[in-house]
Amino acid sequence: MDVHSEIWNDERAIKTVDMHTSGEPTRIIVQGYPSLEGETLLDMRRCAAEKHDDIRKMLMFEPRGHGDMYGAILVKETEMTKSGNADIGVLFCHNEGYSTMCGHATIALGRFLVDTEDEGIFPLRKRLVHDEENDTVKVRLHAPCGVVQVTVPVTCKRGKVESDSSKAVEFLGVPSFVKAKKLEVSIGVDKRWKGLIEKRRETVQVDVAYGGAYYAIVSLEEMGIEKQGRGYDMKEMDKATAEVKRALWDRKDIVKHPTHGELEYLYGVIVVEREEGRGEIGICFFANQQIDRSPCGSGVCARVALGVEKGEIRMGEGRDFYSFTTEQGFRGTAVSVEDIETAEGVIRGYTVKVEGKAYYTGAHSFLLEHSDLQPPFRVT
Image (cartoon, rainbow, N blue to C red):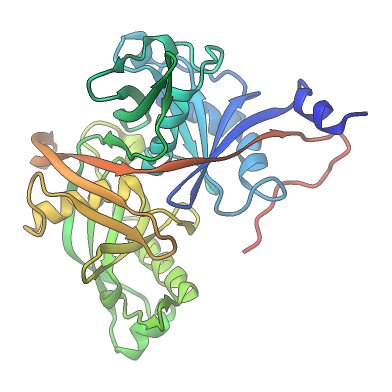
């Protein structure tokens, strides 16, 4: 028995291609996921959550994944592919459920979608055009928050176009905007963390911005958390960000979306710090306190919009963003601005370009044997 071949060719297997973007994983499901019901991508997102969540847990949690695994479910046909406004759809998944946008996964998907030649995975692959002057290929990716324009640098050898791993993929996010600045968040006496107690404070001041998902953005200093040598107290930060998110959870006014009610929730808390000569660093705790190893692509969109609104970043000015945990950064640039009509009035929406690099880490064929009664689990 050739075990490897048996597992790889098993018709029950769920096959994935795994990548990382600045250290943050993306597990791209390429085979074995069932068809999703629904007229729209948001309908299909509900279907995935209601009918196929066991697959998310199987691939994200141990023993096949881990508590900080991230996934991408390719959706071959959506309302936007049917209308000619997108090339393929995607649903993003994590340790809690299904997100509305993911920048690091978008960067990884850009490379993968250019590289794959399997029309069973990507039916409209032949629609993609090689821009020979700039050596790029553009992909229109339909995410739950909207259509994201992805530009992938490529090489062409003997007529074969492949992504160029030495150059950054870039995407233009959906319009990003600010919902609240200098918002005072009260933290209950029994919910305060060490840094807040030592500073004898009852509140923290946060900003709230949208970059395809909603984020509370707060400085390390404001949280009362100090560096430990060259590192950070991640347990303290975990507790602090969880309490900030909990305190804001019922504030529906700060996550009101102009068009889609399903996007109205606080996805993550980003703790930030300016570092001399390096740009901005930070870390994002999202979903069920999952830690983003990358600078968080949709979070960068939100942070750039916030920076422009505060007068800290100019339109067209690129800024580098890094994570507390890994070395490779993203670059974010506000490239255009538009007015967005909301129930509360007109707000400014910024189209932000995010640049970053992604790399392949492997390919998998996952099984669940009939006699395997071990349910997926997380170690916390």
